[in-house]
Image: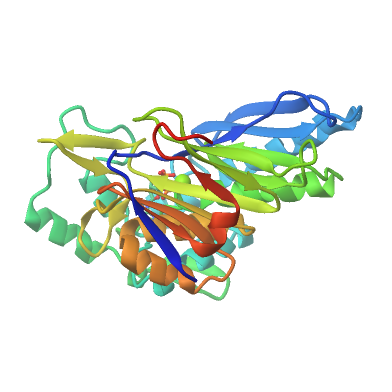
Amino acid sequence: MKFAVRLLNIAIICAAIPLFASAGPDGELTKRTRYLMDTYCSVLAPVKGDQKITAALDLALDRVEELDKKFSAFRPGSPVYEFNKNGTPITDPETLGLVKRCLDMNQQSGGAFDITVTPLVKLWGFYGEIPKVPMIPSKEAIAAAQKMIGPGSIELKNGKLIKLRSSAEIDLGAGAKAYAVGEAMKSLKKSGVRSAMVDLGGDLYAIGLYNGKPWKAGIKNPRGEGALGILGMTELSMSTSGDYERYYEIEGKRYCHVIDPLKGAPASELISVAVLTPDATMANLLSTSVFVLGREKGLKLLKKYPGAEAIIIGADGGISLTDGLTKLFSLKEKGGKQ
Ligand code: ADP
Ligand code: MG
């Protein structure tokens, strides 16, 4: 894989948004939306005169709702909540499957991806509501929180996840949404839908074609004008990690909700990472890991995953595109033509 690195002289923030052309041969889209996993989840498919499509879309949303209940760290009774608050071992196979993938990514990323990062998330004020007057924690407090985390604080064995340290908590925030996107798409396929887009708060998955072309997603530039570029997506998911939704600033420096466990502080080298792969969960595990690792180490990690493509935007305005992405993505400089 080769990488093209371009430097833009503007600060760019990247967010994924599905874009839909006006009606073509496939007709209008049917769209169903529910507020799930703390964001809006939309599923869309071309109508083609088939009334069953709405039922299929609703079924896909039901599946996301089921996963929202299961993976929430804030909903009493969920396996994750009961594990965190009461130390109840997790035995639900689906939750364990996601935990296992997260633990594997912890190893692959050299500890950058860590579902036990909660003590640091709390310390920096990103657990629940962001504090109105945020403060940088002391070095001592950071060191103490770092001692509490790490994959050694939990154990997954014989179909059970248990705590090895009573203070351990798990946070599936960086995998649950993308997993749900993948499951929604599975549900749509099972219902016989051949062309659809799932959008869960900007985590996307597209299958088939719409009006004979891949589905389009815009990488928008909310601090500048227009879009940074447009992506064509089919049989592909996209997950993003960024510093633009949950953050605060202290003395002009931005602190965001993705934490580097090794530094014990918010990751700050990058402002946005979008990863594309047909495996939705992998897309998010990678986008969070790359966001923490930074450009150079992040690109090294991506090389281990053939088929994974990424757009990496640094705080310095530098944009890296993996080689395979140049076919899918058209980059537009400020003021340039699409
Ligand atoms: P975004 O919220 O921008 O989409 P992500 O998809 O990477 O970003 O998800 C961020 C969430 O991941 C955080 O809200 C937190 O729950 C969790 N998290 C933060 N730091 C880490 C980390 N180092 N490893 C794993 N999960 C993390
Ligand atoms: Mg994300």
